[in-house]
Length: 459
Image (tube, helix red, strand yellow):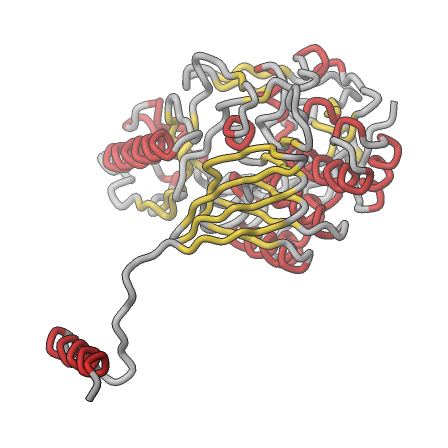
């Protein structure tokens, strides 16, 4: 026997002695090793939340090779993981002002769950009929699955549990390094659309960001049951908890009365605790926001169960994450101002609408609201989605370029859906014409949005 063969056999024998007995079919796992891959695509969408889902579907349907990375486990963001399962608002002053892919998703979720649509012909006066009566309730879990299905059908390459760590623009291409469970990817792309909500990709790429020193509180959303509100003796319960207990119950059961001014679906049982300073821009800060939200809810449940009639109060559900209202915004080619928003200013490059009151949650004790005047609808220009001094880079969602008051209204889901579709269409045409998004033909861009069901503002 040759020496080399002898050494090999001795090594195998030695391994056999060291290896524990293996059952049939069992194998020893190799040591943990991070898989490294290089991926080439045309468009990279960062964040699979409200805006990112719509952006990815639009890019895919337009025939563009698209990768979508999402740090969580499902799509939909605020609507699904956050639990704000009533995206709005798609209608204003008796007509629809936001359509396209976002509305398609909402309607599919409504139809598959046999939900009831609001009566959009009734115009809110913000007294007897409030603006939120036009929000459409969806089943969050169903919405997440539908979003995923539509992404897959559009050819989008979805990467869950993945986040960017480095972003560099080299020789006309973006090179993005990402990490996830057991992977480290390098994604090379022509265009990036940052839909992270925190402008995370924009920051990593080196673009300056803006934020307030004191941000709005976040919300940790939950539902409670196990008590009958109508039978409670409220005189024995501190007044500060009355609305909390009432808000969670199904109300407005006269939905089927055609002549009723309150001809809207029943209000969804919905409750939340404020999380002051909630920030999702880093893992550490997001962890802190989630821990504080859950701790506050535990304290509330324990307190509520001490009241007469609430001894058997139960926690029915709680979301896995705190919803964050405000972190960073880009410094864009144009900053949408409060005056722009409340006056309904239409720009040459306005691509979508936004309709929601100025809605600034201040110290957790009060909300500053400013309602739009009759027939006023705000618009979103392409320039507000593009960071200054950038090439082949867009954002969509609450991190668009806007002042704080305008942003407090622009951040709602329907508006973010419209932005996502607009940003994706701009990225597609930028690739087609070999230009940066700021230079795409606006007329052609508007036509593309219309072809995919979008509603485009007209000057």
